[in-house]
Image (cartoon, rainbow, N blue to C red; front, side, top):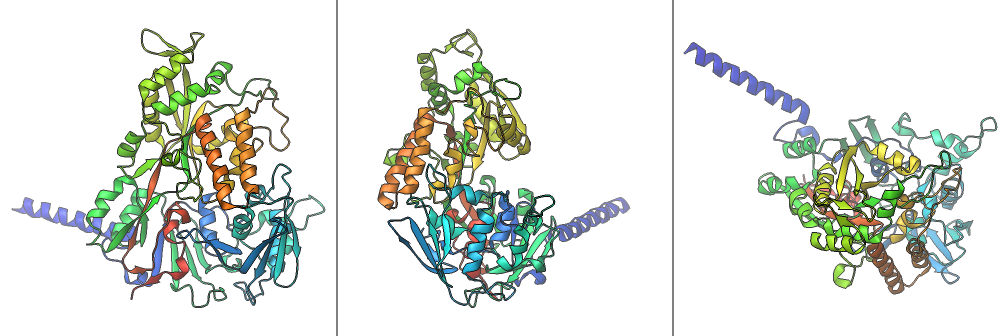
Length: 592
């Protein structure tokens, strides 16, 4: 009897300890604490790296700053229409070469200072177009083959003009969507130091900057930042949309583990959660009981793909080829790439890796974009046909030995290294390895840290194949850096950048140049119907030549608590974390 009593006491102690730890770690395991009921709490998948919106090179810093800064116009992700923001109207003149924005009257920054045309002029002229400041926005605003930037002119106290060397359709979305920065804060930081020729802007608004010194024009301003823990926002008292935002406290909780985020959502500590495929059945079962709704906003934006190194160039320092010439011959053979495309079992990827909550991706344009060309509309697609893969290879001069290993025409075993970022894509890489080995290829699968892959792609250029993904959106021209033959993100055949010497032996294929030309042509065309035709040809050419072999795209599934009103999640608004459910954050309300 005493022994049973001690066992019961021991179990009770363990249970109390677990409950205590759960309460400590998860802020309460089953009931949302009273302290959290008056605030919106959402997860942020990783800590941020900077407060400076121009120097952002990670998705999470961009997300964090997007609620404090806004641009001249915004895109409604539901209607896909452009809507006024800091500018009340806009118009094209001179046959599409001039874009004029008219600002709203009486705008103010979060510190009460006037927000004027001068801030817009400063943002572009002194920051975005400043070659001493690294900015992706500058690259996507380069126009046509000349790669010139728009000329900016202040017309009067409320109007600003952007004049372009030729019609440039992406100008409206790109210029209009750029966050405007406060001149009165940054003007002194862009002046060059006469001693070291550096500018202070590059060290401005770091994570060491007190948040009360951050000035914004968006719905919220930062109230508190705790590294690796949370960001707390409060309403911007001078936001132009009077009476908004409606939620007084908005918290982004840094939760880097998806498993932890799931636990915290189920415990009531998080109001939103972006579902993985394996989460769906569990969360769906308790949807009504735990008072939340799972929204399916359709395919996420972006793309995932396997990519081969097509660079035939040599390292100017060592005169060694970036890719083993034997492998380079395979990779540059479009028949080889088509055989790979037919060998990939995308349906298995959807079923086994995404629990059925994904769909095949066949295009470099996001499925939600108005420019997307579907297979039903004629886009070339590659069904899973491993026997056809073998047939393509045999016709192209490859052969099989007695062990059914694939050899090229010179008896070389077809073997290469496949890199993938360690983490979420490891299982995907394992399946691709299995699929390709079924058609006789030997794959050395190597999951590594993303920084290692990035270094190989951007610096050494010495790699065989990799699995990667890019973010997407409505405007195809946003990926111009990927398709421009001299683009910084033209990773599958990257040329010299900056002070690098030209690579001896690098070749730009005719189809590669044509894709670049189509991107320029699409940017020049202002007629939306004609633009869609041009971008349809671009998508078809990519699928014919397969510089990227597209895989699958997950459905954007997000769970939102019933206490949140006006939530209308949209994949086009952003597929990173719960951002797609926060595009109208200023309109969200909490039920009392």
